Amino acid sequence: MAAEDVAPEDPGPEDPAPEDPAPEDPAAATGRAGGLIVRESDADLRRAGLTREPEPWEDGLRETPRPGTFEWWYFDAECDDGSRAVVVFETKSLDASAGPLAPRLSLTVRTPDGRVHAGRTRHDPASFRAARDHCDVVLGPHRAHGDLVRYRIRAGTPSAAADLTLTSTAPPSRVGTGTVTLADDPGRYLGWLVAVPRGRVEGRLSVPGRTWRVRGTGYHDKNWGTLDFGADLRAWHWARLHAGPFTLACAELRTHGGGRTPLLVLTRATERLAATATGVSFTPHSDHADIRWHDRVHAFLGPPTALDPPRKPGPHRYRRFTTPAELTTTAPYAPMTTPGTAIAEHAEFPATTDRAPTPPRERRDRAVPGQPASAARAVRPSAASRNRARAAPRTPPTEPDTPPTPAGRASAAPPERHVARNPTEPVMPRTPTGQTPGTHTKVPAMDARTAATRLARAWSGPDSAAFGALFAPDAVYTDVAAGRARRGRTAITDWHRETRAAIPDLTAEVEDGFGTDDGRACATLLWTGTPVAEPPGPPFRVHAATVLALAPDGSITRCADYYDLLGLARAGQPLIPRRTPDAQD
Image 1 (cartoon, rainbow, N blue to C red):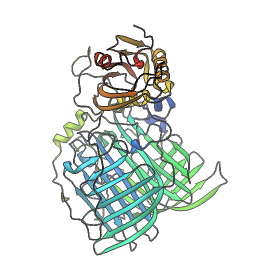
Image 2 (image 1 turned 135 degrees about the vertical axis):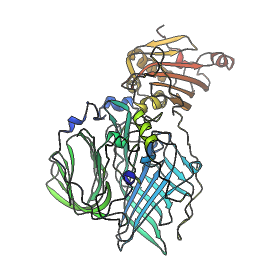
Image 3 (image 1 turned 180 degrees about the horizontal axis):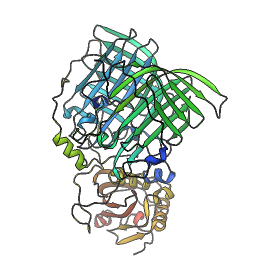
Image 4 (image 1 turned 135 degrees about the horizontal axis):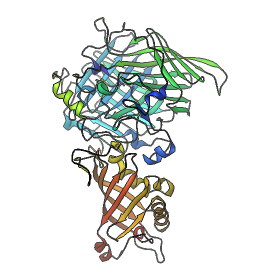
């Protein structure tokens, strides 16, 4: 995670991290105003439509690049010849998150002799495309795409170019639902997915006058969300460490109220040892840093070497650097210390009321961690953010809009299919019926905006318990065309079970839709399947509209399906079996 935009000047290599006070109880950061919440329970996962194992769609576009949101994909490589590379694709910089889509590419290459070539280029929003079912991000001729197993990254700025292949050797991981939410406003959150904790890197790096082949070890993660860093956070610390067979990724978010929320992913070869927010601490000092997980793991990060061009001396709010490292493990293994290397980042965010929303990040290399699957308060930034954005002076961009490609860079292949619009993105917030205008129910934006997608995925799978877990205990699911309703989670769960028995291949796919920050969602779905009744019914394809309302905890309270019942009858399908089980009126 790169927060380079946090301050006008970037950190110099000689800047030490500030000494840190003794860590407070991490629990103190949860459940209070200004605190942060991590969702890790099985119930949280079911409600978010997730399992413990990340899927390729989670590395796709998760937010809508509208005002109040941010999203980026981060890749780094530590090469056997001593060179280093960091590539970041962003929908916008952090300090511009209150504005519209303003895509940016960041690339840093450090050559084996220690010279750093870094550049950032902004691109026309029309050149940005991203898929939602897997990672496939395009910025003009630059592209990063993959499926949690293998990635191709091609990027260039006037300063450097990279054409790399990353093949995963460790399992993709996230902490719980992959998101951290603000305790007093669940619509503000930050997501973190460690898509490739460790992998093999091969390819080419280029700087002016030189192109060379590289091999080494790589890493990829992504961040997205709606958190206003300046208003909500005081600082973040992030590090990624490779030591022998171990890989550790850790981030810690710190609020202005003194709360700390740590997140840790630990793997050993192809095994995930931990993905947790419990028992973790991240403590930076002037010349080193310590990361601990209970008494089982201690990571020591040594003296830093800046992964940025030299800058003027003085205090700086953002630093990204490489460092020698050691990882000491105890249980369940015999005590052992393994040497390694790390990339880390420290950033501080001033709490002034007149600063522009959210800190920059050339790419938050990896700092901020995660929250649930989907989207943020993307509908609109908070009032405080909008006020700060209006008050903050505008600084013209310094990056060229369409940078030339450095010599030696291979041309990017034409982009494949991309989807720039979220089928469940919000279009217009609206006031729920019965509420006073200007008020709304606090619902995690990711829940409202992915509700239809989670519902469709659950209808398409055999797990009736997971389907029922999406609903509130007193929820009502209405089949409007058939004039029937199921009341209560138990009845709704039974409906799913009966329907899947009648149509084992039932599939629902979201075609288009939106969600709002007041807990409403609407989507059009395509339903397909083949009834197994005697005699078997013909295969069907039905387009339907689904309208949902959500509770503050993200569970569905009301759901209604609308479709053309008369059209079905004319086609010889008087009623889809999914609708036919006895219903409670």
